[in-house]
Length: 112
Length: 114
Image 1 (cartoon, each protein chain N blue to C red):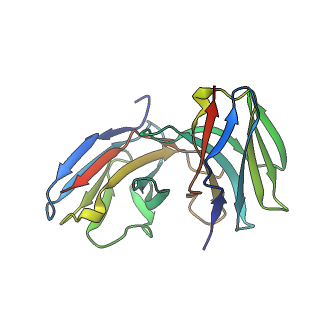
Image 2: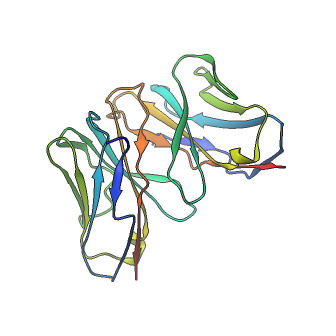
Image 3: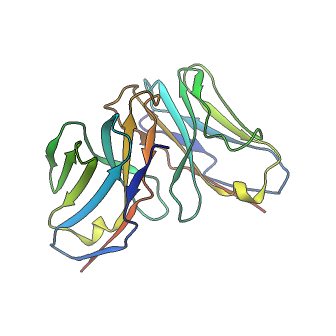
């Protein structure tokens, strides 16, 4: 069973701090990794993807991938109350028909 | 269209009735996926289409669930003889095929079986 694990949270950070969201995956054949943001009552929205080891930065967001450790993370710098949402980690694996396997998500709350 | 369109946005049905949920993907996206999300739960994969074919139906929870896609575009998810446990938000997503493309989700259909 291919699994994607996330801490369910809630993760609470003060406004302006760095929020760190973590995800581990079980299948070493996993090829690409995605972070989605889901506001309450809304559908998931893609915010970042990464497929090479290392860091990838986009504005206040940085995705980090370590395939040897089967670990991917999302850092949000200068967190804002509008970042409060559930963050879903998703993984595509070789031979899966490019199906995304999602973690259950981490609830992030940014306190003003 | 500019995004993935799903209809209806909300559906309340009586137990035992059949329902049809529609998804209109982004133009040019050959891959189409159906997921469902129960209240407070994660995303549960249902079915994947590449073009009009469904190479992965492994997530359909029972034979009451079926889906089709026509013209490589619009897809319909049908649930027969609905049960209360079918109540959930049904999400459709589309993408280009391949490892490095993420999905774009529609806004979902909230199904309530009473």
